[in-house]
Amino acid sequence: MIVEQNVPLQAHNTFGIVAKARALVRVRGEAEVQELLADPEYGTIPKFVLGGGSNIVLTGDVKPLVLKVEVPGRRLVEDGPRATVVEAGAGENWHDFVTWTLDQGFPGLENLALIPGTVGAAPVQNVGAYGVELQDRFESLDAIDLFTGKTFTLDAGQCAFGYRDSVFKHTAGQEGDFGLNGRALILRVRFRLPKPWKPELGYLDLQRKIQESGIAQPSARQIYDWVCAVRGAKLPDPRVIGNAGSFFKNPTVTPEQCLDIIAREPNIVHYPMPDGSVKLAAGWLIDACGWKGKSVGNAGVYEKQALVLVNRGGATGGEVVTLARAIQTSVYERFGIRLEPEPVVI
Ligand code: EPU
Image (tube, rainbow, N blue to C red):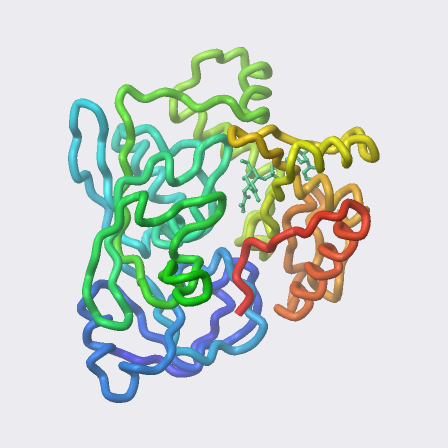
C-alpha cells in the first residue's frame, strides 16, 4: 500500500478545479482496502471514495484520506438465451466500457454513451440519458465495507435506485438506517443486457435523428453514434471545458402545481411521469431566468445548455457554489421551485 501525500486533484475532477488530497491511496482491488483498514495509522481515519470525479465540486483541499478507485477489468460473465451479463471494474472509464460492449456485439448500453466518469460511479447516481437509466440494465455489484473490510454483493433492489439517486448517496442515521454513503467502496459492477435487443428511441432528440437520417430501424451502433453527436452538440467535453454534467436535477411537481405554473408560463417544458407527477426541465427554468452565458468569477452557465455549469478557466469550487446558489434563488423567486444540485460539494 502506497500513501501519496499532497496529490493534485485537478486531473481527477471533471470540473478541473485546483485542489489537493492531503493523502491518497490508489485502490485496484479488495486487498489494498483490507491492508489499509489493518493499518494502525490510516485504518480508522475518515475516508473519501473518489471515482472519475465527474460528480463533485471541490471547495478546498480534501482532508479525509482519498481512496482513488482504479479497479480494472472488463469481462463477459454469461451469454445466456435471455440476456448477456457483462462485468467491469469500478475504475474503468464508463464510455470506454460502453464502447467495448458494442465492439463485443453486446448491445444495450448505447443510449448511455459519452457519460463522463467511471463504471463505479455510475450506480451511485444511477446515471441516465436518452430514455435509459443504469437501473434498467443493472444486474448486481460487489462492494467492500470500509468499516469492516468485508466484501458484499447488492442487487438492484438493495441499491434502492431512484432518479439520480441510490443507497450510496444516503448516509445511515440521517434518514433512518438507510444509506451506504461513506461506508461502501464499489469494486465491480455487472450489467444485464436483455435479448433480443430492443432499441430505445422514445427520446425527442433521437426521434429527430430518425427523421433527419431517414433510418427508421437504427442499429445499436447507429444509436451510439447519434447519442455521441447529440451530447457533443449540447454538452461541453470535460476535457476541454471543465463541468460535471447537469448541475441540478429536473424537479418534479404535482399536476396542480404544474397547471398553476403553466397559467403563468405557458411555454414551460414539462413531462408527465408514470406516477402522476410532472417533471419540469430545470435547464428551461434556468434559461428562462436569463442565466445562459452568465458567470460568477470564472464559473459560468454553459451557453448551449443552461443546466450545465462550467469552469471557464481557474474557477474555484466557491465560485461554482456561489453561482449555483444564485441560480437556485432566482428560479425560486420566479417559479417557487427549489432546484436540487446533482453533484456532491466537498
Ligand atoms: N432547455 C432549455 N434551455 C436550456 C436547456 C434545456 O430550454 O438551456 C430545454 C430543452 O429545449 C428541452 C428540455 O429543456 O426541451 C430538456 O433538455 P435536454 O433534452 O437537454 O435534457 P435535460 O433534461 O436538460 C437530462 C439529463 C441529462 C441527459 C439528458 C438526456 C438530468 C438532470 N439531466 O437533461 O443528464 O443527458 O436529459 O437524457 O436529468 C447529467 O445528468 O449530467 C446529464 C447530462
